Length: 305
Length: 305
Image (tube, rainbow over all chains, first blue to last red; front, side, top):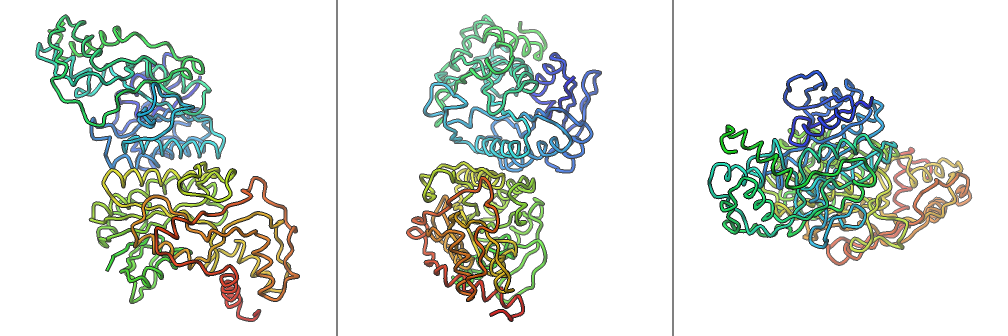
């Protein structure tokens, strides 16, 4: 049984990654900043990962075979430009150092589609698309990957780097696209959207968790995109939510201005994920959005659907 | 008068950079881990730069116009592969954050020729040579440059990155090329060398300090090579030391094995340094090595020359 230490285990992606690792038979040690409810199947550890001593203590205590490092600052909107990105670069390489020292053989870090040069491509490929992050968050993730990969090569640690695209689903921040549209429609109010012409790659967070578990327990090395490979416009996502809720007339595309300088198209090439890991094929957008609607309806008291 | 905060000010390069900044009319605030002797012309501060609170305190206290950040681990031989490179990445971006917050307008960091792909070029050019560091030290410096440059672009801080090539001269670690050859010859013993066919770009550390001061007080942005632009073999350096000391027969080229996988040629393209800064043209290798010999002769008690 592979023993996996997961940082950021109580976050949006962390919770589904932990669930998927358990489903796939791993022994999971989970790290969080705030104590989480102990369950029978996960061993919880409390640590402040910005404190090197705290990192070292928890890694030695857990003595994992593999680390899945998800922790990072995640405040919606703020993380793009936050100076909090700075300490997380070194703080994301130290767990790799400590894990190697404690006998771990593999380390999986988590990056972002915003590491790529998004101006020039139809879909982002790990091998051929240039890296040119335009946001400070993307710069910090890119620097982290370079640092951790360099360390891994130095000591012979197996290393993979999962680049996440657009995730949605249960536990998502309420101000993000799917929750904000879903909640407005469920409340019977107009869901004000931009023009909706921006194209993304929208993945149910449970599928992302499964992909991360597959990467973590597998042998693929280097960067691996985690997405569906399917190009979907923001307008399509909003319209589908409206249709699924039976209130298509509430979706107000064009009611909000488009954000300037936003990348027009961000879609993953998922050849590596599909051929070099045993990640499960993602559910359809319709199935995922239906689940998201049900989740937000329950959160609203169950009265809307 | 420009107020410059220099970290690593008491190191091999730091001492000559501080001297050059003073010569060029700057007010120098110098940071070191261990308290240094106060002098009339430099304001010394003690700080542990791996402690974020310590960084913040010293930067606020000094309130500099410009920061020249030199501090990094430097143990001879060990720094190539040391895990101590990890914390210095974030710890090199935090001074930029604190300096910007304290009103500074410019930040100069210090990198290395080992950020470049050294397999493919006759001379390393900031604009056209690929970055492909092969050592963990080079990886960490490259990641640091990306992180600090990203932060500088985010907040509109002027940023330059000086890439140092081979430095020699007073204060150099005794196990490095010039001191080890000079000390052997001065002691009248054979100076055992490799084949000497590896080619480098050897700069007197005083010229490097002057170049760093010129970059710091100037307006050039992005990476800038600090070197002489002159290709010189290790054999030439050793032979010239032998000739200058009047003991050419003591230089034993080929007595030691060449290091495997060592880059065969590392030479700077110094077009940027010469045309976009007012750095002084470097002294000749002969002048520099003569000074180095005198320095090591004095350290040995003055009896050898």
